[in-house]
Length: 407
Image 1 (cartoon, helix red, strand yellow):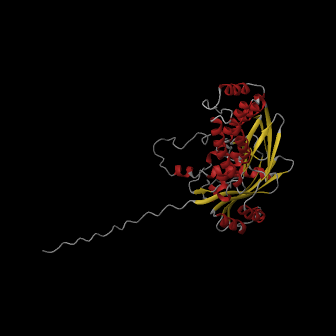
Image 2 (cartoon, helix red, strand yellow):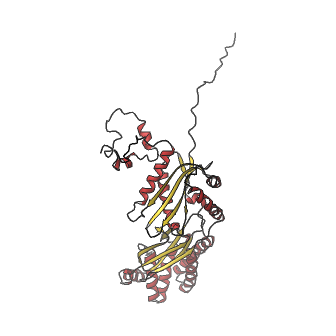
Image 3 (cartoon, one colour):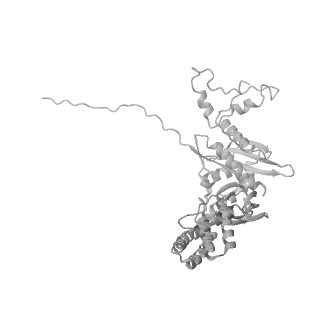
């Protein structure tokens, strides 16, 4: 009997090519004067928000490129502070008040140094402040107790005291302090840094970029933290009083950021060159930072005008080729318009580089058939508009129409 042999040949179906790998892109602005140091990081943040909408790119934020290193001493102090609070609370619960006082005083000193590391909440500082107030109350020092409770309410107005640990008299005193005249007092704080442009957090709430003045803060202690990518995180306990206070910090750069900063003068000169079609300095920067595309520009404040000049180029960071460039004069951010202006600029340069801009017939009148709103409406954000245009026009005749373009 002959055996039947079947040969199964694999199908020769052509595999679909893999989708292109997203290109890494970033926004890098070079300040040309000390005043522009503060506006550059804000502009970069707005540009990055616009870039996040483009699916064909992988956004690299400043903290991804340069890091945001923690203060090692603050981390050690935070660890000691947590341990000190646990030991202090254990002694307090055992009614060993003298031992609890010694431990909580040492703990409070450690936690003052731990301010840069408390990024999630005010604990263990709030817990330790409450315990310190309770120890002072047990000792009979009413004034010191009230001051500590004011600090606690400034750090966290909604902090709840543990009714199992603290006495009714102490909790009642906290209510009395909260409704007193001192709790209603407010003050302001001006925060500066060198270099400027650091993100300011007070009690873990973002307040702006240095230099910035924050008003109507409750009197008492507050957690202040400054973050600028490429620099070590800075923090301190800020004592706010009815008189305005000022805090200033010299930020410590990392070695990688120093190397990046050394390139900026050459990069800026090539970016600002009007007729340049490529930049070797930008290509070197792209290689160092691992980028394929990049918005690289210069920021300069125009004296006595209240305006800022931005020269922004879109570059292929692999070879330094300039794909587009725009020079704009910005009128500030008094009414929150800077975010929309930066978003529009990003979309314009990217869409033109990708061939997505609509062709228009030129005429002698540059404003012919143009009234303003249609320019905004035509803006392609993240390539989504071109995807919609590829869809069939069948079905709803109003599909893809939002109204303003008809006007």
